[in-house]
Length: 172
Image (cartoon, rainbow, N blue to C red; front, side):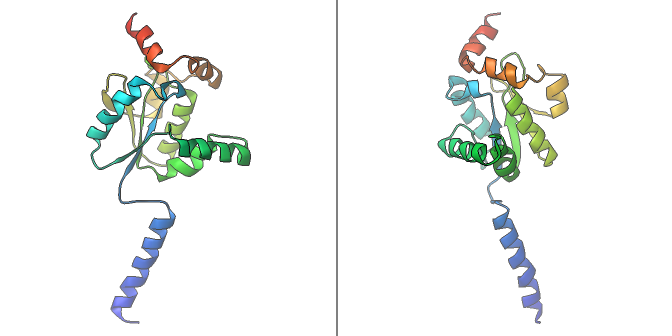
């Protein structure tokens, strides 16, 4: 086998693996947030801030119809809608940025997504409602921020739109 062919064969397998792994040249940053923040003015304001801090990155917002379909598919398949994110979406990300509730508490879903990304060795960031961005860890989220809400507590909080939570918190 000629040296050129020997070099091209591993390159071919690497390209196929890269494509099959769902990787792309553009890094992807997952934007985890409480369901209460979906369609909020806060997220509308934060998306350009995040994008300007990560030029050239694709910001993956879970509040999209394609994700609604994926959630329904995995709910029917496994009985756990979050498996869609844990198994299909998060492994294709290069990192995650997460929005807590205005009091610093983390929704159960966003925290679970952060845990999964950390297990995958990806960096985690926190974005506050005012747009400040800092590195974080799941340990910091759990112990030093506002703590992690249970699923029941998260469901209760998600009944009120995020922007109302923000107004209530700012008026204290």
